[in-house]
Image (tube, rainbow, N blue to C red; front, top):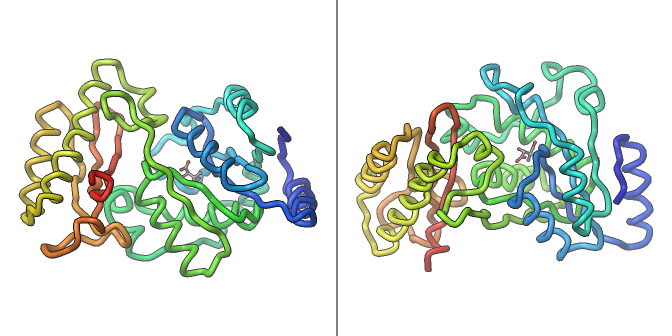
Length: 286
Ligand code: PAF
């Protein structure tokens, strides 16, 4: 497994593989890898001749009140986990290369509307930071395929939209969320939870499933379903931020008469100081 830090090395490698007619699947990450990330890497390695993983904690997607410095950096452990998989190269660029003129002066990608709702409403500028860095990484890595987790559903749809709108030649693949036995979605943030809190947090997935089953059985009073789920989540000791039935493609609010297959239920809640997100595509319950 190669460890690449410089863009010119990455470009030379890509040229070599292109000349040999070999394809690349790319998994962008911010490191601190857990089994959910490794699932993305395994998925990627079945799709192309080479897998490239990037590890870069992107300052542009952190808000002023979000602690970028506290984000866990675990490069040695991450590299060890990736060596065990079929990864050809790990790309770990530095901030001076990624933002040579600083973040304020960076040319940015705006993906309108879909970036402003749900997590985008409470984290203004977050998806601008994500879209910009993913765009840059795509230009650097030039992948045929890029793999993202469905756990960050809004992020996945923002990236799909960017790729479609900018006619980028990358096939975007979404991979199902890895879960604990309790149903709790695997996330780097679970590391901040005690065992008791992890048990409490399982209420989010349980409520997604309950709501999903109601939608599947043709319940149409979406605000009522959302309100009841929020009540259950609050009763378990979490502070709900949103629980919302949306259209998968653009995350607009679901309307009575929408096909259940095309709906996703998205949720965010805080437990102590830890913000948790999860979602469920209604079609996955069939
Ligand atoms: O999902 C993440 O880890 C990040 O948002 C991503 C896609 C690597 C961009 O920094």
